[in-house]
Structures are given as C-alpha cells and as structure tokens.
Length: 529
Image (cartoon, rainbow, N blue to C red; front, side, top):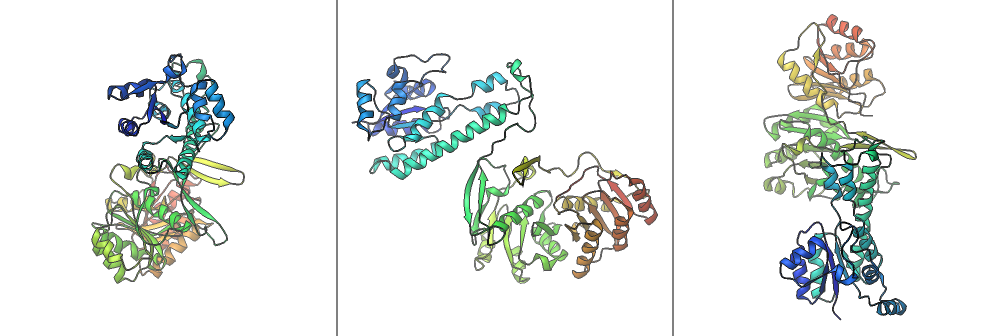
C-alpha cells in the first residue's frame, strides 16, 4: 500500500525537490494552499486537503486541516485493530508522513511596522496541532519540521525505510520547536502594554521585559564536572545566538572544553571584541590579567604578557585578529601554557605549530567589523528561586566624557584613559586599571575596597617589573572619597577616568587639582560584581 505524505510549509526551502523524490518512490502527495500550488506548478500529482476533507479552505485559511479525515489519518495507531477499524468505517486513509513548518511569527513581529492584528494572524493553529499529533504518533508517522532533515529521511526510505530512532528524533525535534514557538508568542503577548487590545490595527507599545519570559536552550555538550568536581554541568546554546558570540565557536584541536574554560573564554572574547585596533586579552578566572593593542597580533601578545606573566600561565588568550605562526612561536618560546586560544581565524601554519600541544584548545569564532559590535541582548543572573534579567553592558560610554580638572589631558593621556576605561568594563568590581601606551600596567580586581584594588594593581605592576609613573587609571565606579585617588596618584598615575556622580565629587576634583593630575568623568558606570 502506497504511503501518503501531507506537505504544508511556509518555508519552502527544498520542498519541491523533496516532494519530487517522494513521488519517485511512489508516495502519494497531499497539500494545502501555496504549497499545493507550487507543487502542481512543478508538474507533481498533488491532492488538495480539501478533496480529502470534503470541505473547502474557509475563514481565510484558518480552517483547512482541522478535520477528522486529517487528524484521524495522523493519530490512528496502526498496531490497534480498533483504530484501524474506525478508519475503515469512516473512510479515512492513513497519513504516514507530515511535512510542516509554521507561520513566520518571529519574522512578522520583528518588523517595526507589525500591528497587533498582523501578529495575531501570524499565529499558526493548524500547523502546531498537526505537528503535535504526528509527533505523538511518532512510531507510525514520520514528522518533519526542518528542511535540513529531508536528505536523511530520503536516504533511509531508499534503504530499509525510515528507522525508529530517526522517527523519534524527528518527533522530539517537533515538540522542542512547538514549545519554542509557543514561548515566543507568550513573550510577545505578555510584553504588550495595557490597552494594546483596544487598538489592534496599531503597532503596539511593548515593555522591555514580558510578564512571562520563555527561553529555550539546546545542549551542546555535557561536562565531567562544573566549577568543582562535586558539581555536574553542561553547556547549552541559544537556538540563534548573537553573531560574533563565543557560542559559535569551532574547535580546531584540544581536549573538550570544561565549565571554567567556557566561562573564562567568554570573558576573554567579549573583552577583545571591544577593541577596534588589533588587540590581545589574557584572562585568568574570568578577569583580564593582560590587555594590549598593537600593530600586529605578535606585538599585542608581547605587550599583554608583560602586565602579569605569572597569572597569564594557564590562562585563556583571545585575539581579535587571526593568529599566525609568529604568535605561536613566541608563545612556545616563552614556554607559556594556555588553556584556550581564541581568534577569528588560526592560520594553517599556526595550527601546525600547536599540533604537538593537544591539551591546548584552539577555537575559531567568526568575527568582522559588524559582528564585533554585537553581543547578547540580555544578561541573566541566577538567584534562589528566581532569575535576574538585565540589558547587557555592551556600551563603553553613554554620551561624551567631561574633563573636570583644571589640568587638561594630553591627546596621549586621553587615549590611555579610554583604553583603560574599556578594560575596566570587564574587570570584576571594584576595578582599578592602570594603563599606558595601549597596554595594561596593573589590574586590581574584585576587592571589597577600591583602595585595596588600587594597592593590588600597584603591587602586581611591581612584580612584573613595570613602572606606573605617567600611567592612566580607570575606575569602574566613582571614587567616593579622595583616599582612592591619592593611592593611584601615589603609585604614579597622572590622569584618571571614572564615572563621577558621588556626593563628594567636588572633594575628589579638588584633590585631583591639588595633586596636579587630569581627571575625566564618563557619566557611565560599569559595575561587574
């Protein structure tokens, strides 16, 4: 008995070729609307669903597949005689394959001029119903929602038939997709401001955070453990991660990434992306311990390493330019062990130079001038019994910087301050970053007191044999008292950049003038707790 396939897709990628292949294998084709028209135009013998149901498409296409002759043919269990007898009694034929994808709700609502009425019309009803029915009856019905699966299905059909494991995989994929689809609709509808329902012909105003927030993640890999051996862990990726983000990595070599590898790699990658110039970032425990820009990746590497070569050992390094052989040669010459190296590309020569060090994970992440500026739209922070959501801290400055001291910074000082300011955005609070000539000279991070962060930065600079004389300092938040300013000036800083906004700003500015340094306010804070 010939198999029957029902095809009804909004995404028509590959559907003609797939239908032709099905026809060649003797499969009877059922279809609806635009899909049926397309297949008929291509000369395929296709039966309209309306011919099966005995009812025309009605209510502007809202009702066409919602019928016992469709759902009976999908849901009937072939292993239950009473089900098959019911089909025979009512003249219902089985449907053995369902090829459906859904109205483009996401694409419709992404348009700036999408009205509430248009959004509602792009909510698919019949499609999810058929998909769920077929997925529920997966043992008897092959259900395909993604064109990427056409090839595998055809290949198995030509062999011994679609395997049980493939049918189950396809069913799971359907339930995941319809869940995401419903979640997307919920996110949209529960974000609408009150009163939107009174003017459906208008583009509705939306709140930034919906009343109900749905997020679907796809497992990429399990892990031996999390931050510590007694913790289990796994890495999940968004269905459509923002371009240029770490989740799009391609691992060239090395062991499987660990929980801490991925967390630290993300910190390094987001930091290095923030620079337009050729840059290199070294991260240890999610904090930059060396950042520099240079004319070449090699120069950037050499400068970044000077900041804190001790902490750099066993760290993560990221480049915003391709890694070439000369960089790897320098790393090997320094006998520097790195856990992970990330770059937009790793040349064949660089790969060959690292081939003997299989413990080193090499990652390529696509990056260009456009994607460099992209990042996650939202940040998440888990708390007991809930989740904090916020817009991501993706902006260096909101507005222009303001010189508040009597002394005006030189052009070079302003460059150094802005460089330090960019680095400070990625340093755990309380952040104090000393910089000079496009490289970090000392980084103080994560202390309960900003004073201690400043002292630690100075100590680490001394250990690295670097002088802080003539350096620029950035602080992620304002100096609440002049004592923090005095510490960095005593260490050698000649200019300071920070948000300002303290009740004691006047005192701090007066202290800057007293010490004879330039001070700049950004008006932007970058806490990273």
